[in-house]
Image (cartoon, rainbow, N blue to C red):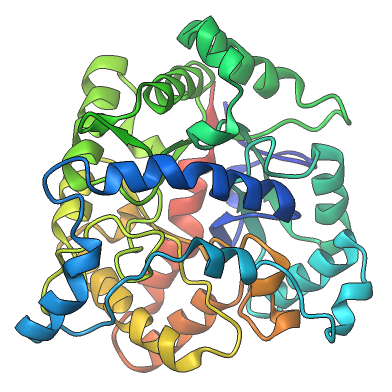
Length: 387
């Protein structure tokens, strides 16, 4: 039997429709801000702890010297935090969380959107009851997740109990939900973001293994958040471990933020090519059967010039992946994670890549079949549960 589990119940894969694969509905900005601040010391240690780890600071000089297009990344946690909220002058501040995000979902529907994958594992997201209410009021199908985020967001006592305990917690959540209602999550999410001794830190490595085993057992998709200062060799080592040792089906795994090479905090590999993007890592993962998340299409409100410089390398990466025969390994999303990036604040919310795809079709850079693959076929393939 094959089905997709939304917060409003199970549906057939063909019912999913036009989907954005990486967003965050009704996330708690204070929790996110706390996690970001708590994560900074570990992240900065990892930035200089091994060969190639300190290249962010030298990247602007290198690009200028070699004539590489695209702006050099910058690491600004405070900039991320400042952009999460709404200005006092914004009338949307008077709306409840539900009403605000219903408006955002309606904007997504206006550009063709039908379904959304919510990548907020507890404690960064809302309860399943609240997310279900959002889905019911907006008419957008929402798939929520079980799992863990970064090291800083997981209680130390969980790590002390070991990998088996972490896996058991994920499985219980998949089976029973969070107790707020009878809704249950439809996939598993985890993260790699901290480097220790030139490796993914033991805690996040443990959590990823636990999540992978739970996803394999229950037949769900597995999404893996990747972030600075994780580097290419560590991603590939993990991919091989997941496929060869744990035995998870790579076609059910998404390595998130593989397009985050120009945007600072999400930067994975600063050593990009002269076209402004890095193709080797996405290609290697796709050849192994994994999926590539191009899911950072969201932008800063009022920053059209800056975003346009970042979007063009992404478009080129997307086109090259299709040209190489791996277009069906790509997922799209915005990583919309707070009110500050919403359309009601002059941002794009969940509307950017649908508009961008239309433009690329009009320009002859993609065809309608490619858009259908990216937005309908691939999401349904990855998110379906087979038990």
